[in-house]
Structures are given as structure tokens and as C-alpha cells.
Image 1: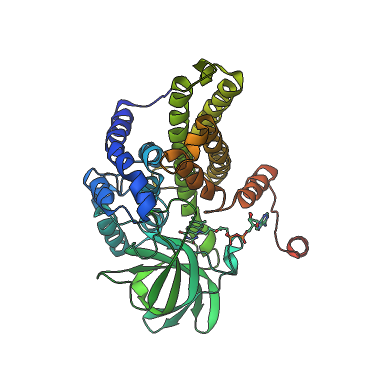
Image 2: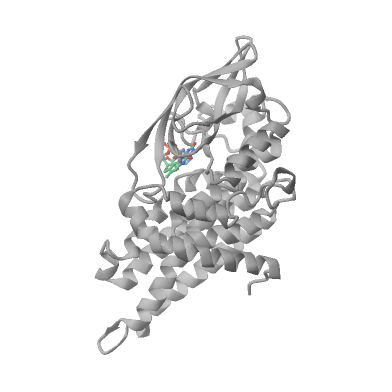
Length: 399
Ligand code: FAD
């Protein structure tokens, strides 16, 4: 039951074909921990970077749903490439296309269509789930802003050219809210005032994660991403763009789980023990059945969330959170069970199963943890705020 149009099927099949090249080098990307530059160039040539960039900006103007079809295919083969496809179609680029000036959109479109995977800088050492506790400050000085602070776990730190930095806005000595600042690098090194230090990570090792220090980074006033409705509600509006990113992250989890499941299905039918294919043992057959059910359920939620996006809007907040929680939890279970089907061979580093298990682990943490997103879902189904600070309910009662 695919319900895809002819154009969607063609796009998916094209992505599946190119993703075979990603599959061939996924093990080496993991082993070397190097960003897969050659594959990214191939993805850009094939038109998979900047799919959602509007035609007026030189992109193909495809939908979030189209991007999801592509991301799943790359993630089955190489989850690092899947994540690159997310960031080249959603997140920072989505926010800039929605809220940016013409000049900002042109810069972002040019970089992404040429193969850049933008970075989004929100998290800080002391501000993870409580992102609005961030301390990074952008202070207005004449026609420019000066940014100081420390960000952590920044995906693509050191390889991305386009950066969307979130910081507290200080104008006329007063704090106004949280805003987005576009910092693009033109040369080879990091932009002036920015340094990146790599964080060794458990999975998705071809994708650098980095601590980024910002020391007196100067941003011209025309590179400020001004959220509609002003600074006070700025963070919320800019974070709407994150609903797209969440659907994308859920799709990577879905894709890599589907990849692991495919390997398990094959293995269960060709590996024999006790004189029969191991698939004949009910313990494994039901495990495979559960995997297929969970995968289909996750795909249905992801497709629903991706399709909820209007032509210029982002996916629905509730649908995006539900889909990401489901896919992230599912990917941990499915990749673990897929490795179980493989037995000892699955535990070997010569086999992709252990990589799938490691790669699956991050999606319940990054981009809103499974716990924080459940609270978001609860707020929306209950129709009430569920403040997380100790005095939150007292403050609501006082309003
Ligand atoms: P903490 O907030 O310290 O949470 C620790 C634990 O407490 C978690 O289990 C959490 O669920 C739980 N917890 C915290 N608060 C609550 C609550 N109110 N209710 C219930 N449980 C709670 N950030 C960026 O800005 N840009 C990026 O590109 C980026 N990429 C990332 C890539 C990876 C691989 C990873 C691992 C992280 C990335 N992040 C990025 C950071 C990510 O968004 C944060 O890790 C995430 O928001 C959680 O913050 P934390 O890790 O500090 O956990």
C-alpha cells in the first residue's frame, strides 16, 4: 500500500539507485570517521541536495514528503548520507527559506545546491533540553552584531559552510529574546572567530559532531534571521522549522531500521540450524513480524507528518513529534533485534549489523529527546502547558 504518485515513485527509485553507491562505501565511512565528500558531491549532482529549495531560488521546489522519500532510501544504505540529506533539505535551510530575506535565501540556496550541509547551532553545554537557557549572546554594535558563546554537539561542525547560530539578542543594552544569525564561510577555514573541536561519537561516525566556540563573531545586520512576530516569540517561530528537521531525523531512523530489517529477513531465510532455516523458528518469525509492523507504523506516521506541511509551511508540530518519538524508539528495538537474528556474525565489525545498532541510538537524544517530545505531545493532546521549571505552574496561575 504505497499510495505514491508516478513522480514520487520515480524520485524514490532514483534515490534508491544512487543510494547503492552510498551503501558500497558506508562501512569505510564508519571506519575512517571521515565525512563522505565524494558521495555528497554525487548527491548534489543527482539533485538530492536542496530538493525543498523553491524554484525562484534555483531549486526544484519539491515538498517535505518528496525529501522524506529520498532520505529513507539513503538512510537504508548509509545513515550518514541520510542525515546529510535531512540537513540539506530541512532545518536551517527550511528556516531561512521561510523567514529569510531575498539575499539570505540566495546565499543559503547557492551553498546547499552546490552540496553544503548546513549546521544549526542551538545546544550549549549547560542548555540541552532546556534550550532557552542558552547563554550565547549577540550584542548589537552599529550595523552589526557581535556573538560570543559556546555551542556543543553541532552536527557538521568543521565541514558545514552555512551556520544558523541561535543567540540571546541584546539591543541597546536590553535583552529582547532569541534570534537566528547566519554565518557563512567562504574560504577553507572556519569563519573568523569560530573554532570547532570534534566530539568522538558512538555511531554515525562519518558525520562530525563538534563543540563550537564563538569569540567575537561579527554578523552584519542583514544576516540576522528575523522571526515573524518579533524577538520575544522568536525562538518558538524559528523552532517551527525544527518540525521539518524532526520529521527528517525520524526518517533516518526509519531508513536505517528498514535497512537492518532487510538484512535480517535475508539472513533468517538462508542461515540453517538444526537442519532448517532459522526463519522457521517461531521466536524469530514473530520477531521479524513485529519488526515489519513497527516499520510500517513508523512510516505511516512519518508520511502523515511530512504531508501535513503546507506549500510554504512546516510539518504540524504534534504530528512531527509523534512520528519522531515512534521512529526513534522503534529504530533502537528493530536494529537490536535484527542483530539478534544474525547471531555472532551480527556482532562482528565486518558486518553492517553492529553499525546499524550504533547508528540508531542517537535519534532518541538529538533534536528533542524522547522524553521532551513526549511532553510536547502531552501538551498538545491535553491542550495545556506543562511547564518544566519548578515554578512554572505557579507562574501560569499568576498570569
Ligand atoms: P539533557 O537535556 O541534559 O537531558 C539528559 C536526560 O534528561 C535525557 O534523557 C532527557 O530526556 C532528560 N530530560 C531533560 N529534561 C527533561 C524533562 N523536562 N522531562 C523529562 N526528561 C528530561 N544540537 C544542536 O544545536 N545542533 C545540532 O546539530 C545537534 N546535533 C546533535 C547530534 C547528536 C548526535 C547528538 C547526540 C546531539 C545533537 N544536538 C545538536 C544536541 C541535542 O539536541 C541535545 O543533545 C538534546 O537537546 C538533549 O540535550 P542534552 O544532551 O544536553 O540532554
